[in-house]
Structures are given as C-alpha cells and as structure tokens.
Image (cartoon, rainbow, N blue to C red; front, side):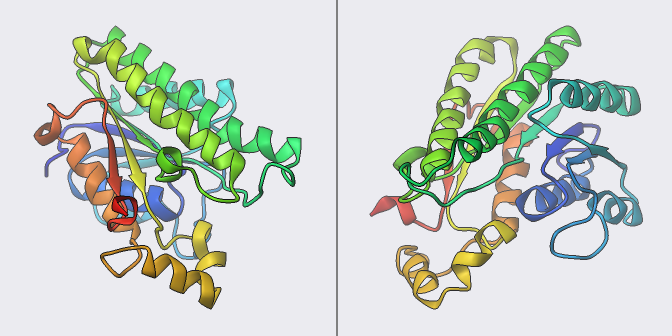
Length: 253
C-alpha cells in the first residue's frame, strides 16, 4: 500500500499503459480519477474505474480531452472535490501517427502535438497550481517515449511531441523541485498495447522490434505501471527531472 492516502489523476486511463497504471495505483491504495475520451477500453472488458471499484478501491471516470483547457480544469476541479486533494498526476494520454514529414498532413501534426504535448502542458499547469495552493509535495509523471530521446524513424510528429515532453519534464523539475513537487518522465520502448498492435502483427516488424530489444521480449503495460508506482511513491523522492527509460535495453545499442 505504497500510495495509501494519496489521490491520483491518470489520463488516457481507459486502455493500454494508462489503464495498467490506474489499476496498479488503486492496488497500492490510491484514489484514482480515470480520465479519457472514452469510458470503455479498446481491448474490451469492463471500464477501468469499475474494475477498481469492484476490488474495493475508490475511482471515478472523467470524460476528458486533454487538449481542451476547459476539460482539464473540470477534471482537476471535480477530482479535488471528490477526493479532497490531488497528490499524483500521470500525463499518459497520447496518439500516434506513422508518417514521415513529407507525408504528414497538417491536421495530423496538430492532433499529435495538441494531445501528446499541449495536453501535458495543460495538465501540468493545473497540477502545479493545485499543489502550490494546497502546499502538497506531489508527484507529476509524464509518459514520454524512447522516440523522444532518439527519434523514431517515420514518426515525425510523435518524435517531436515526445521530445518536447522529455525536455518539458526537465524544465518543470527545475522550476518546482524546491517546492517539493517531484517531476519525472517515463520513456517506454515497444509496449504491447493497441497503439503498437499494427506493428506487432507484421511478422517482419515484430522480428525487427524483438531483435532490437536485448532483453528479448517486448514490454507489457505492467512494466510501465510498476515504474509509475515507484516514481509516485516516497521511495523515489530524490529522483527528480529524470527521463527514466523502460525499454528492455533498446536504447543501449
């Protein structure tokens, strides 16, 4: 129960990595706001907040577009009203387009930047303001990507957005570490989620990804969730401004 007594917001939490993080947070005792643009998971099954409630945890669902200032403000207000405070914010919501810049339409660029980068800014701004006003030594965890550190061939908008998330994490950490607000990012490698399903279903691409992962397996959402629990807990409070890579060794080549 490493997060007992803490309240958390997890964006993009209806499926994939966000769903796994929300479930693990609840297992560790946190009250959780499950935020997403859809309530039901893409993979099928019960909504995340219902699973948490069935196991005796506390959770609510918030229909939230993280690129909308109004939606984000409402999410923070209603979470604070429900749980009394907000200790942890995980900025996980994101989209992916596989396009080189010559093929990338402006609408695709705007969508990726608005959700993957602007959404992190909007949620972080609200988190910082709440934590400062309530004198909370909280934790902000941004889900970046190894694409934000190395670039990712054929994904111009996604690489740009995640690169922004990684450096934004460092900047916010510099500004608010002295206030007791812990800010870090997790940079996943290839994780078995709906976002990577198309690539994993291609035998050649799957073989390429596995060969480039020295640990010889692709990541599971739980690998990222366990890392998020650690960063949200008091065990990691001297880890600050880091982009923690969780990729099975992809980036050590």
